[in-house]
Length: 68
Image (cartoon, rainbow, N blue to C red; front, top):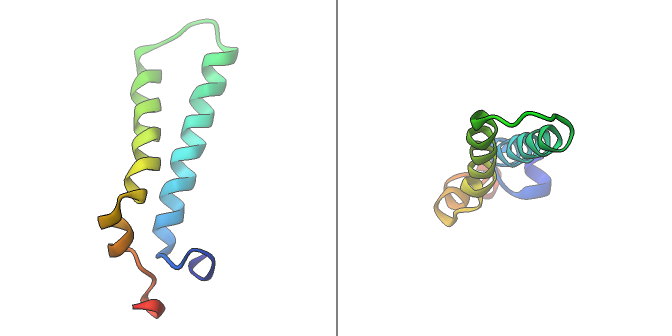
């Protein structure tokens, strides 16, 4: 994964986990009749997992060792 992104593997993993969590919550909201406050909490957590790796400071910190 580092060859594709130029970042440490945890950078891509954070993005993928956040996207997966957001898709999961979206499917829950679409298919389950009852809504819960936890869906908001987990949806927000997924959004943060997607947004945090894109911050410039995090991107600089997670540069792959071979490209430093």
